[in-house]
Image (cartoon, rainbow, N blue to C red; front, side):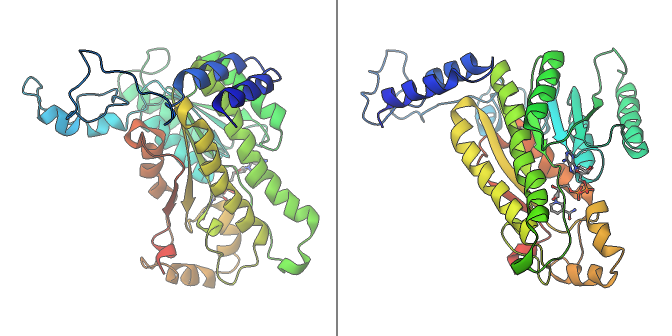
Length: 353
Ligand SMILES: NC(=O)c1ccc[n+]([C@@H]2O[C@H](COP(=O)([O-])OP(=O)(O)OC[C@H]3O[C@@H](n4cnc5c(N)ncnc54)[C@H](O)[C@@H]3O)[C@@H](O)[C@H]2O)c1
């Protein structure tokens, strides 16, 4: 299909989308890369010489790195942590009432986010979540800010079911209305279910896992992506998959869980391909075994599993939830600005054997 025809088809289909559609169309028309059959623009007198490297983008922190070192007018100073800064950014994290989602929400606040909205099922947040919110508030005060003073982040709670597509679009839209931007989405809500022989896995249970782990992840990513396009700021969407999306867990009959996570890995790649020219990056993050309430359901009931799971990776132990702080800050921030369509494994090397 020619580009012109493709654009006409997309324009027609966008007519049925909600109010962010005009921005979608504008982004598509203004950021498309030049097609190879098109004649390249003739060089203007100010064009770089043929020996200059082609430059299609400039870091918001430029000059940085070697370019800064080669500029004698620059005062040397470290900028690497500035690249990880989420200063003033707005984030949503699903499944952030507890577990890995809550840990990642706190990490985003510590990286400087203005507000991190935690979406989860319970009508009211848990005591654990309230303590984390209070910790974030006190951290802001410690940084010289606090309520209304513009420093430190906010943790907000939103009761939501990721299986409800319309509800997710609306509730994330309300976050956009309130904050006026959307920068980061972490889709971490997930469920595991019982061991059942794959040949008789009940339809209802299979669908229950897929509805949260795959469909719900798509609805969350859609909701955030719509707001990113609406406000025209670049965005980072991180879909929480699992190493079991690639490597089934030895001796565990978890076909729906593993299937749902494989789908998430492919979903991230596919969305990345569609959204790259709109400056929205999409990656999946695949943790290995980590002790949370999800895995406690197995480990606390069958203590021998701790030794077994630990022996399955070269580090000889399972992971801690705080060991995902660095990778989530990296994926959410400009420090990973050329990373999209990737699956990042953090598994203690489980996959290496
Ligand atoms: N813990 C691990 O070892 C591990 C490893 C790999 C991947 N993961 C994935 O990481 C994510 C977080 O897992 P965790 O270990 O923190 O589990 P967890 O059970 O502690 O947390 C999952 C959260 O998702 C929420 N949730 C479930 N269904 C929901 C729905 N329909 N709508 C909104 N929220 C919903 C739960 O209420 C809970 O707060 C999951 O996607 C999980 O599959 C976990």
